[in-house]
Image (cartoon, rainbow, N blue to C red; front, side):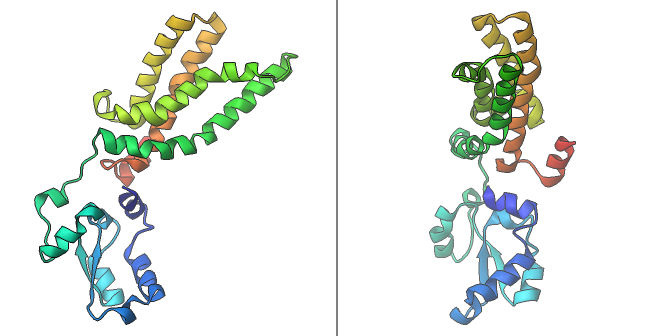
Length: 220
């Protein structure tokens, strides 16, 4: 997935390969002039350009590095299973820690606003701020972990819409259990689904079935 993402945004390209080969001194180390690239590099790497720039012939290998020994044993030929891109529950879940790590970009501004709100209200920014932050933390984790895990089963095509829809329904469930006041309820309904939607949108860079034009369209 990281290779596909890098190829899609142009950081894994023929030009990059032409710079890396001399830097690694590979032409001096090997006699052959063939280079195996991951299949998911294909959107960003023009094989003929690599050959023109480096003299190395590009062979697109399997999707997964674990299949490389078998790929080589078969004479650099891939069976259908090696070409198949999957994005199952475990694979999606394995990528969620990246989203959690990046969630500080959303969490810190919310904490700052909650602290400012308390100061303006004449209250000290004590441990109560963490209690107030809990619904927002739940929204962040929902967008970073739960929505990616449940992605195929949430209606809609847009990642942002999927996240917003899940966040909207989850907010109603949370309010039914916590019974907040009117002002807090309106705040939750306005902000929490938006947080889940924005966190879900970040996952587009980790998925295997979005493309650069689709991401740009969704960002607009």
